[in-house]
Length: 273
Image (cartoon, rainbow, N blue to C red; front, side, top):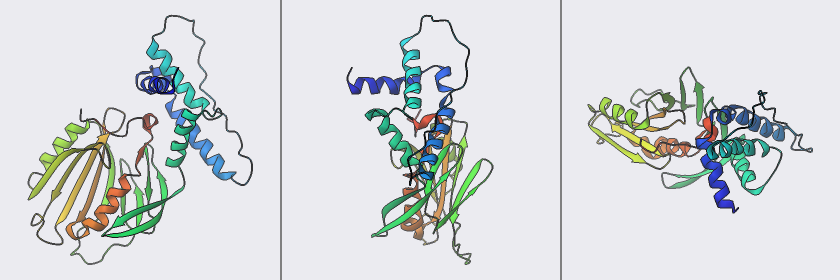
């Protein structure tokens, strides 16, 4: 069987597998994290094996199984086995996961027409990971809302507040997008659209104050995308017009390094449904 059909079956199996297979995803991610952290700690010596200990289950009598069940279970098993058995397709997947969880990452970006390089640090939440330039920003994790804000805030109250907040909503991305657009309808300028970059989902943005005529007009930008659990991630970014090419661009680029860890990260964003 060729690589492409097999990989497609694995992908379909992850999406359509039975509850038994999908229940193991938290254990799979925990084991992947454990393996990665173990490899980091032993870089100067031979990496220690970190076995995966699956949950004990009662033996079942063999019976008729659908193709989706078998492929789904096989997909979960392949991910688990990939921790010790390295074949090109699964190793590529594990390498991608390792990149997500690397403690630091060099990020190159262009800001206000000039190239900039920063070494960003990993921040892990319960359902996602994101990289932050800690020389400029700090993460404040709260109940239900994580907030990223500048390390150094201007004391002059002429400057509108600057931050990025990450939360989740039980509704689907399209419904959340429509609700936020309605909530911002009193602002001078409001736009909403489906997007594919930096995430695949919806964007709602509004410009307050004079609607874009003054340097300190506040800007609110929402990214709404599927959280893989029937709801949505909602990322709110706030800055001001003069900072659009600075803070606005940094927040935008930061979202390129946002990865969902729920449901093995198979779906980062909604498809507009």
